[in-house]
Length: 427
Ligand SMILES: [Zn+2]
Image (tube, rainbow, N blue to C red; front, top):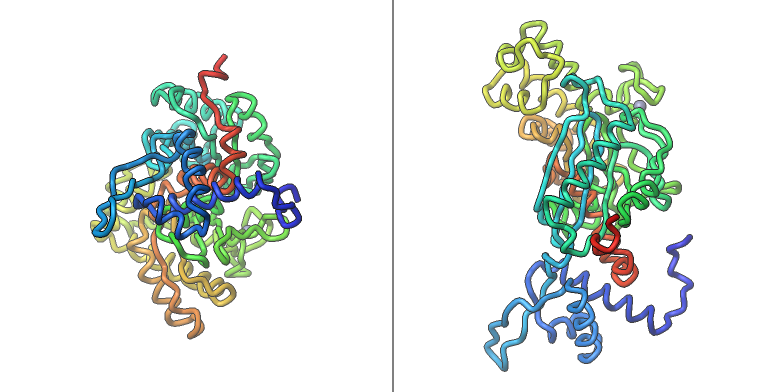
């Protein structure tokens, strides 16, 4: 209940903090520069308050003057906007088989990006140990800080996303079936190690946040983000907020049972959705198609390395009309659509956002999924708009960036206090 503001008295300091957040959020959402009179009008605050709050934000370098407005009546006003260069954010995705790290500015524009494999000998399934993966991530973070001159900027924190159950308050991974990791206090470890705030979250929930803040679901209050990677995760945005459920474990849509007699799942059940449309299932089916001689073009691309087949090769085979590949992707779309029908009937979202590794081949999967939804959905919910993530393969790592941005925009004064100039803390 730490963040429960319902019973907090509205003392003048809190009101000021709240109003800083109000203006900053408006500037973030607006994307276009705006003027002081306009901010005064939309916020309902008086002119001198807006002026003083803007001065404070300018002193933090998060807001800058960016030219003059063209006004037909009266004097041209000074334009104000978020200062993209006013800070830096690190986003890290820990996935099965790879790590992705980005350094962005305050407008979430990527300044630096690296993706590295964490598999052994380039085999898809042999994954490095947990300590190797975490060590690798630490070296990558240090490299990003060095190569981008981040010490010259205010660092707003490190967002970390992974598949699995996460205790966000504690910054602790509780468990991740797909990574095979148990309880790991990553937040506390790295806060100590780097001297920066660390926010940890489930990758699908974080991706939903990124889509809402800067992606295809901007301004949409009810949508479902589907993360189709090695597992199948879900991020629910309901009434404008990422929905966590009672214990913040909501969104485990990969374990919705589609076929009770289907393949065994890591959760102990059978025929879970992710066993049918997750990337592993897709690879399994394509592997079989290659072996049976049904996918000659994919075979030509992967050669003897069927075990290290990747999604780019599958996309290439589909683009060259390899019928065996197209048939399997179409069937994946069918099962994807069947699952989506149940979810849309329950939740009535405006949009489904499809992201993660499998979204690279969305063009060959989604037409069938849309057809299933049209044919099987209830009249009231079948108009749901199914879209590909704005960030596709990078949806999760952009989610990690969004975690830090959201914390900052929700409570800028407090968060600003924990953001740091690294040169102060470097040993
Ligand atoms: Zn399952």
